[in-house]
Each structure stands twice: as C-alpha cells, then as structure tokens.
Length: 481
Ligand SMILES: Cc1cc2nc3c(=O)[nH]c(=O)nc-3n(C[C@H](O)[C@H](O)[C@H](O)COP(=O)(O)OP(=O)(O)OC[C@H]3O[C@@H](n4cnc5c(N)ncnc54)[C@H](O)[C@@H]3O)c2cc1C
Image 1 (cartoon, rainbow, N blue to C red):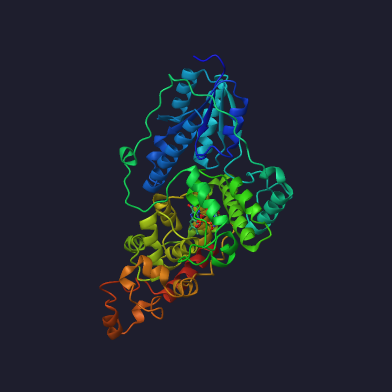
Image 2 (spheres, protein in one colour):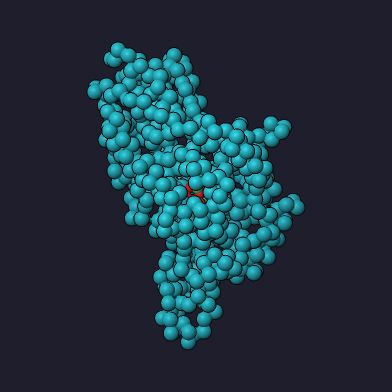
C-alpha cells in the first residue's frame, strides 16, 4: 500500500505519452504514482470485426509505450480480461483514488465507459475524462438550432473557423516527471499476436509513438516526396506516395490529431496542401460526430429509404471482390493492396466501395465488415462514413445516380497503370493503352505480352454499363417504396 494517493490512467486508443491530455492531467494532479494501465479486452479481441493487422500494430505500439514509460521511470501495467474487473482489481491493489481516460465515441466504447464510470463512482473513486481523439468534440460544432450537422461543408466551415480562432488548442500538453508504480504491482507480459490467436504475413507499418511522430515530420518537411505541400495535387493518385499514411497512428492514438494540426499550422494553414490535409482531419471528426449522434448507422443506412434496396448479394462475386479477381484491374489492384498491406489508398477505397455496391449490387455492410476485418487503420466511424458515402446511403453521400466508372477512374488516377502493375503482376507487361481494359487486347497482343485473359487474369465478372442501369433501378425503386 502506498502513502501518497495513486491515480490510474487507463490507456485505450491513446497509445502515446506526448500531447496526451488525460495522462498529462493525471500526472499533474497525482501526489503518488500514475499507474499506466492497458487492458486486453476479450470483447474487442474476439469480435468478428477485429483484424490481425490491428492487433499486431497495437501490440507493437504497446511495447513502444512501455519502453517510453520505462525511460521516464515508470512502466505499463497490462491486464487481460474484462475492463470492469481489471480496473476494480488494480484499484484494490494500488488504493487509487482516481481513474483518468481519454474519451471514445463508438456506441460500444460509450456503453463500456458508462458502466465503468458508474462502478467507480459507486466506490467513491474519481473519474476524469478528456477530449483527445478528435479536434472538436461531438457537441462543439452544432448548427444554429443546436442540432448535429449532417452535411460536411457547413460543418467543416465552422470546424475551421474555430481552429483558426482558438490558438489554445494548439498549445502542447507538457508531461511532468513520473513517479514509479509500486514494485508489487503485477503486469502480464505484452503478448505476441500469435498468443492471442492472430497471425498475418502482411507488410505492416511499425507501431508506436516515435514512428508516428517521425512519419508526421517526414510528411510535413518532405524534401523528396510530395508531402503536405504537394498533398492537394498528389493525394488522388494511388501509385504516388502523396498522402501521410498516418491513419493507423491516428487510429491507435500513437499520434494525436492535435499534434497533426499543430504541424500543419506550422507548415502554414493557408498553404493549399496544408489546408486540404487539415480538411481530412475535419472529415475524421465529422464521422465521429455522426456515429455519436446517429449510432444506428452501424446497422442501417443513415437514410432509411435505402434500407429497402434489394441487393443481389452474390457470394461468388463477393469472394472475387475480396480476392482481387473481378477482371477490373484498378479494383483488383486495390483489393490486393488491402490483402498485402492491410491498408488501401483513399481513392482506391472509394473505387472498390462503389464497385461492390453499384456494380456487384452487394450490400455496403458486407464491404464495411470486410474492411474492418482487414484494415490496420480500421475505425468504425471513418469506415462506416466512407462506405455509406460511396454507397450513396449516408449523410453527406454522393447522390445515388453518380456512379463511379471503374475504367475512367482507373484512366484518370492511374493513367500509366503503375499502381495496377505493382499489385497485379499478371498484367505487368500490358501497355498503358490496355492496362485499364486488358480484355480489349487482341489474341495476338495477349500472346505477345504473355497473358491469356480469361485464363491468367479474369474477364470482367460483370458488365459495368449493364450493372449501372440495374443499380439505378434498384436505388430508384427503394426510394419510391
Ligand atoms: C470506403 C472507405 C472506408 C474507409 N475506412 C477508413 C477506416 O476504417 N479508417 C480510417 O482511418 N479511414 C478510413 N477511410 C478514410 C481514408 O481512406 C483513410 O483515412 C486514408 O486513406 C488514410 O490514409 P492517410 O493516412 O495517408 O490519409 P491522409 O490523406 O494523409 O489524411 C490524414 C488523416 O486524415 C484522416 N482521413 C483522411 N481521409 C479521411 C476520410 N475520408 N474520412 C475520415 N478520415 C479521413 C485519416 O485519419 C488520415 O490518416 C475510408 C474511406 C473510404 C472511402
């Protein structure tokens, strides 16, 4: 038992020390030790939506966090079990008088946190929660009538105005010295992913705060890559390193959105690239507030009319889409990137999501679930928002009659076919004139480039023009009912 009162900081999706509001606040007020606690929660680990890639990335980030804490004279306490029981145990073992955490906004997280808060208050333990995962919280950007925005543009206008008017937001939280946690306090070892039943051969980014900060730094001060200043021009071309690739770090809080905002501010908010990039952080916040205010989106369409769509839900087509065998090279390249790297370029995500819903006429929820099972940055709010946008069923969705043409998207955003050739090696000798439509090559040309379409690479599994017509009819019928 310690003499000075201890405080627990419960790490969840804020796996860093720098710029961590709840951890900093706990460290500032604690007269005893701050006990850094992370709970391996079976509800999350055993969910059918959890990806091996995220587990591997998270465990690596936990190792990095433990190393940073040790460098500060502390250490990470790991427990495995239900958060309610684990927190209660650690309170008993440390006599902690308070528990701090950064807020999360998914329905599952909110329900869990409400139960835990009630348990803690019932025991007379203080609870302090902080804003961290977003720049502006769910109730900070509202319409004049105090209702949530459901359209991005006016939301983003207010979001930006508040960022520009509020320099306090840009001040970095400074971490004071840490006291060691009691020696007697036990911790499980940070397991290997395999010990938790997860295995993957994917090429994943390294987890952790340091790597995330370095990546942000490289993006903002890029010399040889487009970086933040070239972002507006380059971000739509999946073959180019035109985006930050910070999404897994933001997903697990290895890096704070506030830190990103500060870096963009230093690069000059008014610069075109920086301004566009900051807009993506606004999209991120936008989808969190949508999920918070309209939690039904995880089960149903935001616009209920579209729940009446009679999807084809052809399982053979779904398998071909998952495996990158649709015969549309840009779609296949993107799906194979997902398989290989547990990540996909944003333009490619839009193309494959449109293709699944509007060309294969498969329910967007199938694609949404598959993405969650694969992505290293899989996040309920952004993933659901992205899927409902592409399917035309969501808040700020593109109108249902605007249907991506996978061939013209491919020609526009991968003109030379570099992205396609990288992920679809069967097509590596196909010239730029046929890379988007390899089925148009004559038999003779196919022989010359060493491929037989229909044997070595599939013929298109559906006809885009025909499916487009069918999609329009299905959507129209659903709206009319
Ligand atoms: C169908 C679909 C599913 C998606 N699923 C996810 C997901 O599960 N997790 C996820 O983080 N993003 C998701 N996105 C958004 C976007 O594709 C990724 O955030 C982006 O590709 C990540 O790459 P980056 O870090 O290089 O992004 P950058 O372009 O460098 O953007 C910086 C950050 O802004 C945020 N961001 C960028 N674009 C969006 C967006 N459209 N919506 C919300 N936040 C955005 C991300 O946190 C990103 O890291 C999805 C988009 C679509 C169309």
